[in-house]
Amino acid sequence: MKTAPLPDPHSRKMSVCSSSLAAVNPPDPVPPAAEPPADTAPPADTEPPADTARRDLFRYLTAEESADYQAIMDLFSATLLVDLSAAEVTAQLTERGRAIDRDTVEARCRQLVAWGNLVPAVRDARVSTVAEYVRSRSRFQVSKLGGRLHREAVAILHASDGAREVARELLGQIVQSLERILAMLGRAELDAEALAGEVTTVFGNQRLFTDSVRDFYAYLAGILSRYDLGGEEYAQFKELLLVYIDLITADVNRHAPAVAHRVGLVLKQVDPLLEVLSRLPGLTLPDGTPVERAQGRTRQDWEELAYWYDAVRGSGPEQLRAAAGQALGQLITNAKRLLDSSGTGFSRRADFLRLARWFAASDDDGAHRLYAAAFGAYPARHLLFGPEEPDPRVGPMTSWWDSDPVSVPVSLRERGDRAMRGRSSRVPDPTADRLRLTAEAQREAEQRQAAAAELALTGSLHGATISPAARNLLLDLIADLLARHRDEITDHDLGLELHVAPGPGTIVTSSDGTTTFVGLSLHVAGSTHGQDATVPGQDATVFGQEAAVFGQEAVV
Image (tube, rainbow, N blue to C red):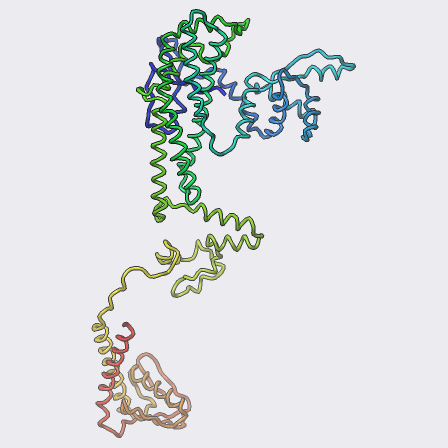
């Protein structure tokens, strides 16, 4: 894998506090060269055609038939200089337990050629028929970028999700290799092969170290963003942070100054070094296509290496220390969250995992009951609240859109319970209600007394005209008399006697209608106890007071 280029010291200074991953993913370098004229600079939104073509290399990983494409690419990337026909690919896939017909394999290979992962290959073959000749001409081999991409894709697909160990021991190897390079540069005769080997070792170790640091801090960033650390997992994370990161930081602090000093000495002699390396036999293509050379063969490579270890300018080591400090701060935040579980960062991850295990172990009916119990997904008929006076027009078939909303208490809506909260309300003063009830009882007693006096003066009721209040009192007396199966009844409170005898009937007229008592002759007279006439009002007053007292007790 080609590492991201390190920043150029002349272009811009790396940010220290921007991100915990900045130490292993520095910005692209800007070489210290003169800017091109304004009329020749390409527009900012224009991309070279090669970039679009190279993006097609990734299509086979996300295509619908990605499993077929990956199996085919495995065959072409297994060995060097392999070219296969569609029939040979079909046979080898069958041996590996993946049966695909030859026409489909050929279509897949041609699609990979269109994307740039494969290239056509021509090889002379002895054939007996024209069909065999045509099939033998359709041979394919892996392209350079297609093979590199597939190797990286396979590595990623088989990589572990856990943390990658940082190759911190390579820092000491880098120091030793730089020591040997300086010693070789001080000799009169330089061993070009040995010098090239040490240079390649320095940059290879640096690339491996930065890749491992990049992966480790990427894993650490994913851990830091979680709010569900607790218990054993939190203890392991704390051990990882306090011990392992401190170990990495200590190694970087110990070796970074030595590397920076020795890289600075090499830079003073970089021209003789590059001249010796340039005399080594190398690869040169006849058509002039640029060749990817190993790192350390240009001045820019050495300047970028020096910049990464330059602590004064805030590069790699300083950003590693800043990332460790940021991770420690997040660890403290998680510790506070564990101590105060009522905060907004409280996680239910463990509860949801336990619930998921219950779902996995349940049958269909049990899963439905578990879901209803866990999330309150009960049918509407199980609701405990409704209107105080149900509307007869609203039935079981009425849609919720058409029916009136139901008022749900705040405690149930926000907290899921109906427990009362807050202080008890004050007991209201019943004085006003007591006076009102007393006045109503007094007024009702007076109205009944007046109606009784009106009936007593009437005597025989046939053809009489009385008030509605007197008529209602008469109906109450008739109902009481008929219920007792008697011919007469006396109301001592009102001072009335009602006599009933069989007869042609009694017709009583009032302002709101006429009342006919069929087959009954009615006669009303005053009670013989004249002193009782004043009693009903007093009794009514006492009744009103008792009613008021009862109302007060009910309120209390």
